[in-house]
Image 1 (cartoon, chains in turn brown, cyan):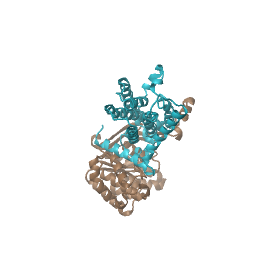
Image 2 (cartoon, helix red, strand yellow):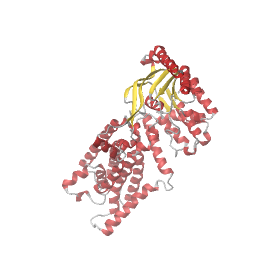
Image 3 (cartoon, one colour):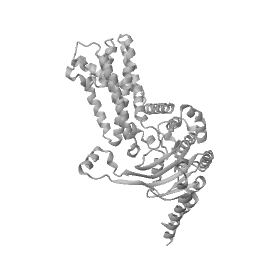
Image 4 (spheres, chains in turn yellow, orange):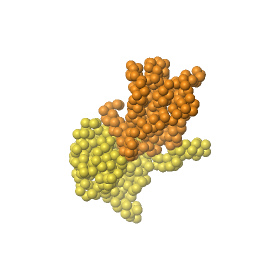
Length: 271
Length: 254
């Protein structure tokens, strides 16, 4: 009984949102818009072997697909930040990958306006054998900074990360918190129009997490957009105005952060 | 497309490759010199002591002229082919033009080419050869080999992501190429109806023109140069086209 009333409440929320939420925004005003975006992956892990291709070509066996995103539609106005929630494997990271242009969707339309910096995974974009300094330079270049911008920002990147003492040590000697500090510092100093964060803030200590939240707020106040995946819902409530709840690759609910997260958290208990 | 950011990115990737390759080696750059010297030594021993060929002078330099472009092929093709997989932690997380990875890998192998060229020129001067005006052709000829390798590696790198077997084909190609480049025999020995097999192969053309310039002190044959330029640019164009057609779903297969 409780479960069905929760379902009804969710549907009500979705309908309410259709009237005054995302859908009301004209596409030209949105920084990120997804229209019917789907993404599926080949299931078989050995698909990259010629032997496997040859076998399926001879036997005519169709490739097994796994659908990671199903018909996802949303639009995010400039300056509004989006929280993405959902269980493990619900498609959150796939959604971020498509939004950042790292992966291409199978169908649907994705439009993104402005530069993106993404913090996708711990140590991503870093090489363990390079020093912190060399990794900062490489990462800045990957994020599209010019040589001048990089050298102008270098000191403030190191200062913000708070690990100046270790900047000439190879990255493999860093703790996960130190890596996150460096990655976050480069990403925010790249001054992107859209900052995408996948779950990594939780690695930092209390002080640095506070510092990150303050820095993100400063970016937001200058009109930048944040897209954030996290299981730390308190942070999401503080930083994001809108939320998207994914379940098995499909949008279960979207709307204001408070309503979606309330539902998400209670829905978690019900099921 | 080729703006300042992209050059800065390329430069950083080349530096990264070079640093990583040498940081864990105590002899460092010396390996780039030791490898061709060893090959030159053994080939010279075999072809002057065991199968002597009295018509050839300075057999060691004759061999080295071809070993330098061949070594570059074998190094750059291996590094370039695996470059996308080697850099997957970058490609899967950051959006950037992916073609820079094979190109950066070929360019960082070019630093080894430069070291080996210095070795070749140093030995030439040591053995009493003089600098001549035809040396001015050399940067262009070696540059064309780099262009050829970029084109080839764009192709093999993209294919290697989808079919991991490609790298072994590329490794095997170096074994075949060692015999299909006139490393220890002159091009004149090749029967005329096989000539095209050599002149359409940029590595063989670089070896032959190196010898014309450095050992025979003459201008490189214009027809060989034209073939070198045409084939190299063709490979680059095809490589870019192939890479572009595979680029879209690259991250899904890494």
